Image 1 (cartoon, one colour):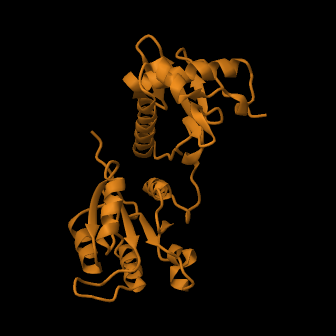
Image 2 (cartoon, one colour):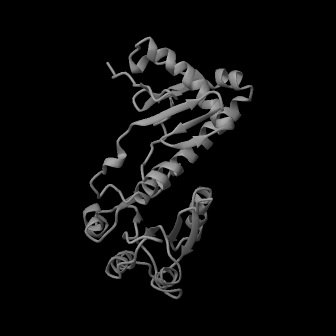
Image 3 (tube, one colour):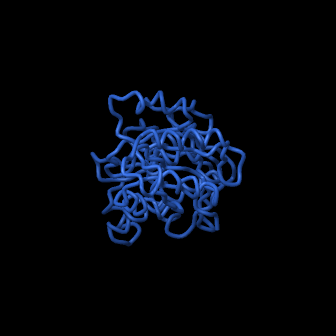
Length: 281
């Protein structure tokens, strides 16, 4: 079983530490530090895949005056010490947590030139932006980096209906995931063969999928969510590619339904014959 990425959260407010641990613990192994000395001790003792760094921090346990200078100093020393990501020679990714103000110290340009690969603004809201930035940073990308070719949005699906599994860029999915994707595949293929424009591809509502799969509607939503988390992890760890939430199974707030994304998904026949996604029109 592949290890979870190990993240060091450097944040002096315990309530925020707990909030972040609660939202990230399913995807990542989490360690925490509350002040500069503790952060350096953690970096010397263990190896990490990413640091989630608050800027306004105390220097030590007795420091009563947290300062943004401390977070910047931690970032500077991570780069000067050439601390690498766990098991690699790549620089350790650092995502800064901050509420940007008028001070130049908190500008994106300032952080970029001191080695941050991205930043996320507080408050975190539903944490989607935070999780997205972590996923991107774990692929050695970020808003301060030029995008890599690995972000090209084409995902190939190949179904083996005899043995009931689907290969997605070489990753094998069976059982409940196969059944979900097979139901969406059947609708997708009919629209493809009818040469429909991409925005006219049919969407299956949760109730329709529930009927096909013979499960409850809430179970449909959980199944989609579980699949998205798993494929995102597989692509990040196996291919170093980033997937957005809607890249394979698509849904939006303005419609209560699901479909394979016709702008991203390509179906490949098991006999190797390519079935290309039609161009949008």
